[in-house]
Length: 453
Image (cartoon, rainbow, N blue to C red; front, side, top):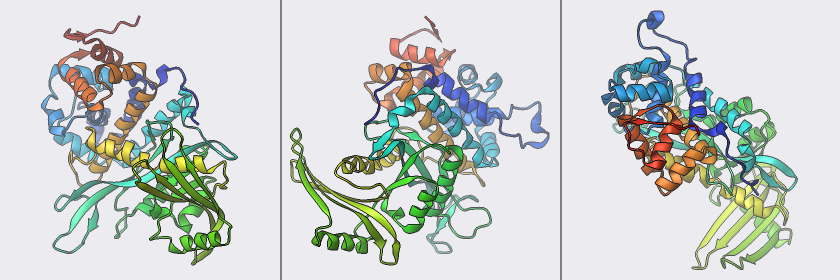
């Protein structure tokens, strides 16, 4: 069970979170000739791009159209620390960001996560199962962020190479701290699935997963994790990699890919070595059937790797059946199967609460803001997920964000984004607190005030 919700604190307000981001972005070294000392401050390029994502601008052209507007310039300076309100043009912003290594845009994630830990809100995501205490579920999966039959860059993977229907694409390996009792997800620094330097072959999800897990261990060495994955990763090498970091796993097992595993469980079932149970929820009327067993060979070709297997079937009041099978290294007993089932089903949080939100709720993850020749598309994708992280943490621990979302927009995020965008483009705003206060109280002045009392 998640721990009781604690009191809100200032750690997770927009002003603090965005300062963490801008402090990281200003540290990116200037690669321009002679550093253009009289030109636009170099940090303004990345800060402006992040502001574009944080304010959910639908295109770089839309953002650029008000670049010289004194209102937007003022707000970029006060809210995003864009020095002197000097905003680069869309063309120049693309040129500069295109040459930057993507690892610079992964750094803010670690700093923000540290603030999240200090806030005490991480405790809400503690997952307990059996003898495992104070662990965290990390749901991981890949998603496509770009596809084109014409545009391409050095990072692009290639489909149907050399053929008439040759196409180019980018994918992203994402991972979020999740919990069965939490709607909010906490994304860690993503890993781009792109063509690697010096490689002639496409990158793939399994290679990206190796890099992602290595970065997680480096950035968060003391986190006790249970890795939650799709059936694509239910293999010996992935399991051994997870265990090498001292973590545990819950991975989906699909009939089509794990026939020998299912056969082994069926044979043990015939021998009476598999525990079974049928329960009915007295409140909802939903029926649950499950069977589980421990220490089963993963497959015939890998008899050394043994796993524990849980088959779970849910039948609702309409008679519709939903079936899941998971493999895990967590010992299965009558006391652990319910928690494991809930943890395994949390894998959908990476699909629904993360990727679907990023693609359908005005974050525009799949939108082409400008593809570039090197790393532009990758860097903009990282900034998009970073903006999503800031919003998720505000929803978790920012009183003013929660109130603006709940009272003024009835919980509809897109409506809140539109209100914020309208104020940002037309009113002089001094602080993030003032912006949210104006949304909540329906302030109609030209300058948004902030009463600290």
